[in-house]
Image 1 (tube, rainbow, N blue to C red):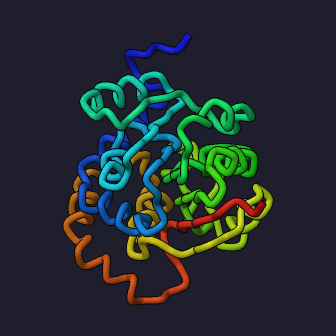
Image 2 (tube, rainbow, N blue to C red):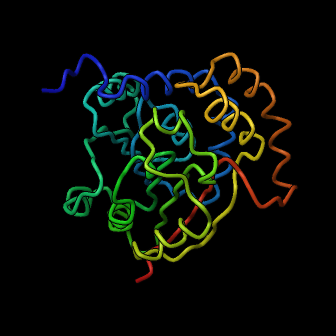
Amino acid sequence: MTNALSPRDQIGAETLAVMAEAPRFNTWMYDTIEPWLGRRILEVGSGIGNMSAELLKRADHLVVTDLDPWYRGQLAHRFAARHQVRVEQLELPDAGARDRFAADRLDTVVALNVVEHIEDDVAAVRSMRELVMPGGRVVVLVPALPGLYGELDRQLGHYRRYTRRSLGTVFTRAGLRMERLFWFNRVGILGWWFNGRIRRLKQIPLSQLRSFDALVPLLRLEQYLKLPFGQSLIAVGTPAC
């Protein structure tokens, strides 16, 4: 029986708490995906709401979801005063999700650092496609470069890291037409490789993250450097039919 007084995945919860200490990075991630967001958004795997708070800059209607009741409790408390936010249970793949969320008339589904946690990623992304209205978008961010896979990935429960080809294949098999596919956070490769492959750490060091966060205004300049790699990949897709 799940204890709603604590998260199922302690390391994941501690990582999200650490990421809450990186507001510049969270805003950078949001600003990067913002051009493809609509006004009626569902976020998959909202956790403690680090990115949910950013999505509220755009959303008139926001459905925040998680499979863990502890996270849903955290979300309900954090957004209790925001009338446009609803907290729901969602575990993907979910064949019944389309009917359950039909009344929300969603134009965007966002999944940031979620798909890599799901064994059947194609079925999960297919469920996301079925949630959006015609003309809507699915926006996904995943860890990139399989060669970076290390202890940090194992501790976080990642099944895989992606290449452009493998993520494109997932979208195609899920029934999505790829609108954009691009790299994100090129400098982050170094820290992830060193901490996960060399030091074999189980969590991102808070002191390093704070230093990294302070550099985000400079790191944003990567948009002008068309280098063929990054710590993450961002994909934007629309239903193919």
